[in-house]
Amino acid sequence: MDSSHHENASGLGSRPFLPMDLSSRIPSLQQQSRQGHSLLRRSRSAIATADPVLLASWTIWFEGQGPLVAACTSEDDCLGNIQSHAASLLLCTDLLESGSGISLVRRALAVQPKLKALILLHRPIARTILDAIEAGCHGICAVQSAGTGAVAAALTAIDSDGQYLDPVISGVLHHSRLSSSSGQQLPLKDLTMREEDVLRGLCRGMTNLEIAEDLLVSIETVKSHVSSLLRKLPAKDRTAAVVTAFREGLVQVPSRPPRWT
Image (tube, rainbow, N blue to C red):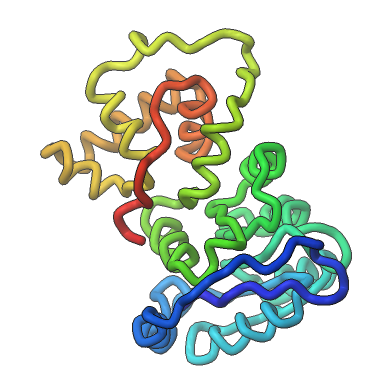
């Protein structure tokens, strides 16, 4: 379902191509592409990237899905189309020919607050990830995760709970040892045992339903624990709670990708 990334000659980066062999996954990827995704079918989508190959492959991928109202390489062009066509889903990369994907997300959400935004980062470093979170991105993936099911996983998460960090992004946040904005460690004792369990589930990329099934509690109970977590950490949303958890060392980075990948 995902498209492999190709860096173009216009200078998306000087890094060499990373070895990748998807041969054994060709049938499943083609089947996923044909099936599409329910969120795509229900959305008016806009796509933006500086990579013309990726832009073309995404455009083909959207064939047979919901309406694709924008396919652009610049921030301003995409924003104009999002406004004029009332787009409800944005898929972009951080690098654009003019402007940036992170700025695009921030400006798009200002004019379309209900827009869902998924961004793929070429350089998934801590500062860029935090900028994307602050901009309001609902899903954040590393470009090198394309072709592994990360985009499909992100769309599923966005469709159900609203936010997603792929394992590469989560790992960067954990290992970067981000400094606390408060300058103080959050005491783990402030969280109940159940809240700790729910927080670990969030950091593993689990949905509310999956956490409820794992803990043998109702989904309403999980929602209550999530609300309590957001208040105690404090965090404005689930993604911010995950960042805080990694930053403060409250949980360990997941050893395996989220269960829906």
